[in-house]
Image (cartoon, rainbow, N blue to C red; front, side, top):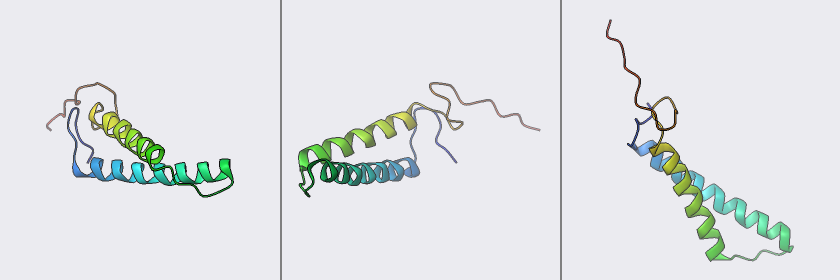
Length: 79
């Protein structure tokens, strides 16, 4: 189940970590292609990874369980 508005669950944190790792890998590959040599700029890699993870976590924090931005949870009808 997705987390509700202004809450995060463990899946959100794990997915944020995955986004950070993938962003770091993509950054290394991109820099390698641009320069033609494998050069690890740890500052640029870490800034890109942290920025991507924070963006993902912020997006999840500000959406409800239906992925609607800044919208309260829908009322569930009890039958």
